[in-house]
Length: 238
Image (tube, rainbow, N blue to C red; front, side, top):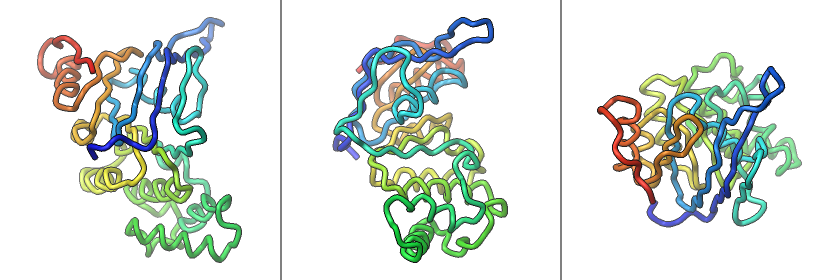
């Protein structure tokens, strides 16, 4: 995990605004300039701090209102894991959902089913291929969502608070799956244990990047910022 990722994300004064009900504009993410070559990066901060917006910009789900976001090399395939797996489970049956993710890479329906079974086996869900997604636990649904993302063979995975809806056992299991992924990953999380396993941690507050450093420095700063350990000291910088 100490080696740089094969994918580098570069943000140059990237910012994001939304329209307000009175016809104005509100800034959700203030200009941020970053170069992110690490293999495992965590983004932490309070709700509404800009974490999810950052990930959506990197994934190309939204375009910056100003500035730019670039992935290198060009044409990098990204996969996005949402906090609520229901947001990305499309088909009602587990095996069908994974097969749906394979439709662009495998033309044969039989081969898609075979590959779907193989992927589910690696997730420990081989016996759930014919199950309704509505019969699954939250942990199993999140595994299916991850399986669907991995079926598309992403070169960069973005995970937005992926353990929020999981109990402790499922959180531990799913976190280990994330850390074992082959592609590089940027994860937004409230789980400071997960953030501590990253190589680099970004701290956001009210739409601003306020700290950027190794977990041992950035996480204590965030705890102080949140009032968990008294007043925050000077922000760490890279």
